[in-house]
Length: 280
Ligand SMILES: [Zn+2]
Image (cartoon, rainbow, N blue to C red):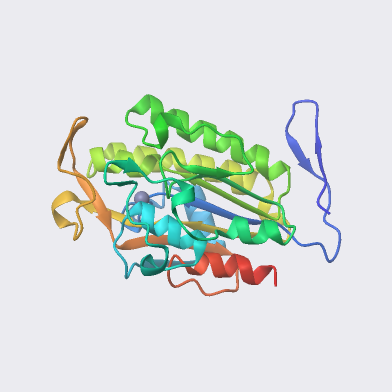
């Protein structure tokens, strides 16, 4: 059993891991994280670099459309679009809810097996879905300006740290802000600034916490990559929105790094099977 004690300042201090103890399986989702920004900026993205150095990294080229709702849904249900049939946040003018999607997610499956699973801010629906966590998403899950992007980055980070200290068997947490930032600012240095902020948070969650010093498993993954608006094969939003003209859109090449995960992840659905296999 990993034990955590809070010191006087409230910071978690890891004490020890008993032999034979099973670690935590942590999936950190970063909506729209893309190699085309990460690779050329690795000198400044210190924690992405550390992750890539110690883990296995690859590009996942989606065979399905790079639609966030559908890809996140498939990632945590193990099902293809033809099976889960959930492609859009809104259908016939109605917001699609969790209950409308007729699948079991990994948290449903494992909870029935008596495992402790926490999921935070998973954007297969809007507002993003949380499981066993009381969390109110920022900006209805569609943060639109710098204030909301900062707020999401901070609040998801703080809640994730809190949940890590509770030592669930599986923890899933997702940041959505990079997707929004890239839609509005693709091609600007501003995007790289945000990857640096994300990099700092990865440092706090993965490295400062000592997470990888124990027998823990990690997947850091995006649902799709990004490209300039005109280069996208699938247009996911109208070019002109009430927040302004869009500069970027989704690309089919998604980001993946794993640490201590043997299961070969070739497509988003494999994340479900990688976690499931770990418990059977
Ligand atoms: Zn997305």
